[in-house]
Length: 398
Ligand SMILES: [Mn+2]
Figure 1 (spheres, rainbow, N blue to C red):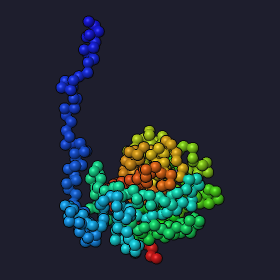
Figure 2: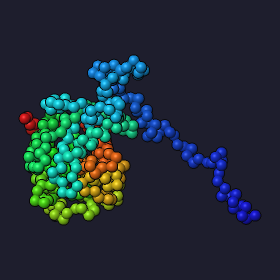
Figure 3: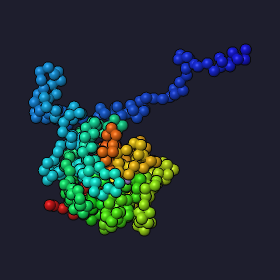
Figure 4: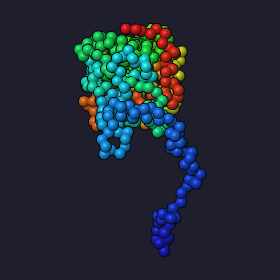
């Protein structure tokens, strides 16, 4: 008898008997539904114009094709597997003097001469451009359509000099300064992290204003030299020597593990930079980490630059990188953090250390692309795209 009662008490409820405990849940209040409603408010004029341009430039489609917006030659976004891979199929600005006609410009920096272990980041811009074809310009959760709400171009790659760091640095600074002076926001696809110095130098030379840096990385990258040169372990030593890029506005997030050289740690102390380890981030939580990073980077500064080393993400998610290290950010965490930082405005972005030869299924390249589009999405959603223009008081002309 007892046995029978027990079995009845623990019998699984049938589907009809099952109780649901969320009678007050209103799907209309879920972000999922609100995002669906918000989409209806975004225009589609640029999409229609793209289709028209496709027909004009790519010929009308064969008679058997019912959808008369499909051209003979692929032009524009569709199909995603076809076409010439600029970043997100953005227009290629062959004449870089026209780059100022756009809100933001992709600059490829195919350079891995600063690498101290695994090479291959010279293929980073190609890798990210190729897999960027996977994305539409619309983000459901943000309610943003980059095609409709901003203009993006791809300025192509900087002509780097593979065997010479210093000549490459000069080329990179010149390219970034040119784009920044034009008013287009520079979006830099590296390349190894040695380029962090010349990229920041390119921005900093166009302004008398003070620039902070938010640096996502597992590594500190602030020693003076490595292997007797200014390698990818050194960008912040040299960038924070620039007169308007003080080390007290450098915020280094995600640092830790077994790959931080002690020379770099001495510089952290000497220069009084700001370091948040992964454990700090865990204890603070993502939202508070973002607030603190923003407070420190913006304190007395007029603009903030974001340097995103892909290896800040746990290496299980980004195998295609120069110095993989376990224990970094999970993808959802870092994307949320990136979005929160970008929501306050940025004067430039670099994504570095993507090394396609070590990648698997393009996932590291895809993550790099995701950082770029999430930054753009946050800038657009918060009305901050173009805010950097007000600090350009020393534009360069070449
Ligand atoms: Mn790193």
